[in-house]
Length: 115
Ligand SMILES: Nc1ncnc2c1ncn2[C@@H]1O[C@H](COP(=O)(O)OP(=O)(O)OP(=O)(O)O)[C@@H](O)[C@H]1O
Image (cartoon, rainbow, N blue to C red; front, side):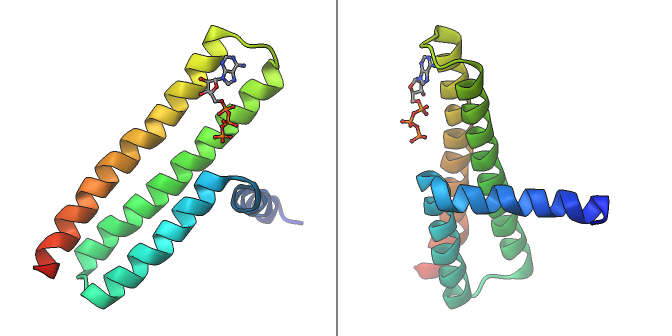
């Protein structure tokens, strides 16, 4: 297989693994479907769709990175260690920060169109 196709294949394997095993990733995938249907029904313009797609990409990418960090820490140590806990909490905090601001942006885009 061509090296480029190989990396693409591994990346798809990672996304598939996330979908099959990570509850949070499945939640984000579900949210993408719900927001996309709402966007179609609401009638967003090109700029609004572009912002929404950036949020979809950012949110799912961050969730996958968070999972990768969790797995790396679990590989490095099975012991309880304050640094391991902090690293996991920081990665989870990064996801939460993005999700919080994504929700605010979503409200800024959708709410004025509904009322
Ligand atoms: N090796 C460790 N040392 C210290 N604290 C840890 C360690 N592993 C996990 N923790 C603490 O427990 C929390 C939850 O850990 P972890 O995310 O691995 O469990 P989980 O509940 O299975 O998460 P998820 O459902 O997202 O897979 C971490 O955020 C961290 O605070």
